[in-house]
Length: 92
Image (tube, rainbow, N blue to C red; front, side, top):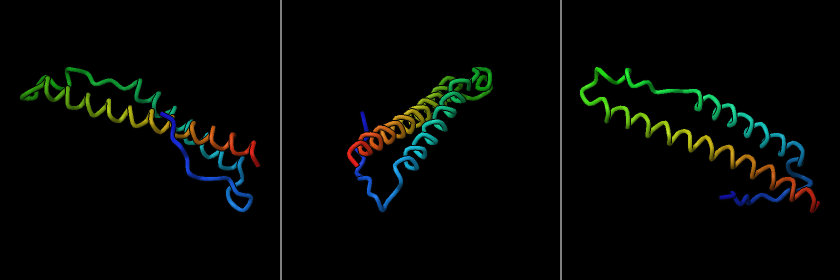
């Protein structure tokens, strides 16, 4: 779901290219985070000595999934910002 930004570019506000590059930088950082999360593994043997290894693994895995979803949301938010700047810049 695209984020509907409330800002309106103004000649006395952010320069469109500056704002766009800031959104791009956030998007690129989120992509690096996503790559790092994709490479991360939760090995089952890290849990085998716990009292309830399966429940512990599932708890950590669920937290991982939530963090990954947040990273993806940041990436989408930043791209929506890029699109908003481009569309508004066309109207200046």
